[in-house]
Length: 72
Image 1 (cartoon, one colour):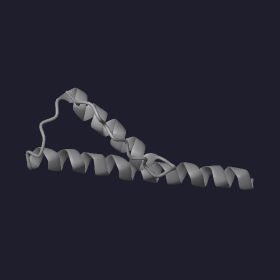
Image 2 (cartoon, rainbow, N blue to C red):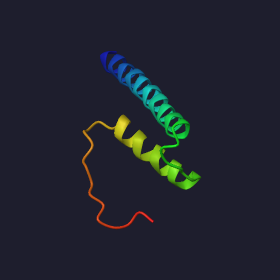
Image 3 (tube, rainbow, N blue to C red):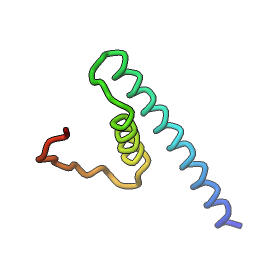
Image 4 (spheres, rainbow, N blue to C red):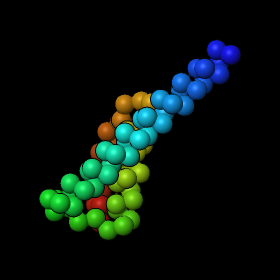
């Protein structure tokens, strides 16, 4: 019984985390679009959404990566 309660609590917490992360990603995309900060094609937008969701929903802190090459 206790394991079921714990599992249900974990699932509920994950749902809350994902809902919050999706909201933050939507807000980020809206703000970037409104302020014309950067123009993203659909492929780059999808990559940004994926990266943000991984960072926001992950169990561990994000590890910075230095890109020494060109993005284009």
